[in-house]
Image (cartoon, rainbow over the protein chains, first blue to last red):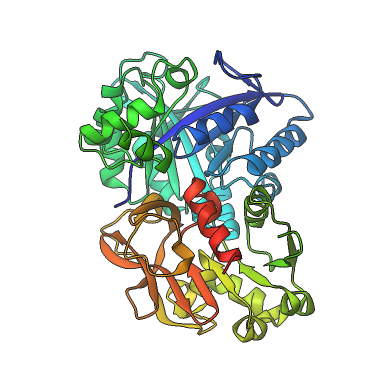
Length: 262
Length: 196
């Protein structure tokens, strides 16, 4: 049975992880490679690296980082942030990224989705959508939420699918950072109207929130950052809980062995 | 194991780097090449592939690799699209395959989310390729097309229907999943292949 995925998200600036990473047992928690290794060894089903640097050298720094991550971890990972051309994508995929995520560049130039999908295959093209509710309508935002567009979330998501995206990463700006749970109503609507996997993002605070987003939000994967980085929730505990709740989930072999002895 | 010559067929299909890195973590060095001579003298051959079937097949034909691959005598492992191209045909772009595995690859039903992306279980394991791999182990898969159940199946998975997730015929092996991205269990399968 296909299982639901748990995906930690790492924000990267100038080749370093940012946004409150405070593992005590890591030599260098600012090192994305070390953090990625930690998560891959602790049951994560995938990782997302979101590059938020704005320097001239960012492309090269990110490409180098992707190469080091690919060398180190044995689970799939997605890279996003500032990707706007076929060349950008080619470098990242050649360096070992499994998927790339595009956001603002897809809205500015929707044809880019078609071009990337036909060149590299839909399976490696994730379109990230940030949206929030304005007067009861979900409106797409760009530039990390700073710029409002006319686009309706559900219409844009449908278009993205038709243009060849393989997956949608939907972040609810209304829920992001609140730790009050995911935007399950909107997620369920996306998941039932579209035929591609939906990754839920924004709002994770408790293990129950993950259960809810899989059951009520019908999400295929759930992404979170701070609850994992601050060890408020460990992936092992989360997966055990999801299993108890009847959610299909992958429990890595090492942990299955571990539990037998208990 | 340092003396073993492992070749990864380089025909412009994506994500070859990940396979090379996975082998490196196991202590093996692999060569990326499209040279027939290099491929023929290798001890083992990995035939990767990510992307669209008809354009991948066109690339193989352009370099003559479509004739080389089915005639190889050493162990060959097709991964993902590589596995699908080893089959008779693929519905994707109405592609004629290399015809090693006697099965036709078809598209998942529209009732399902396509592509299937994520970790699914492999069952009914029957090959030394799966030595020390537990029945129902999880593997990472990303695909829209699949090989139906067939004689040559050595593993099956379920996604709406039961389908073939690994095949074997003589010296040819094919896996729909990505062992290089399937954690330690995936690495075990790669190790098993190299030690066949």
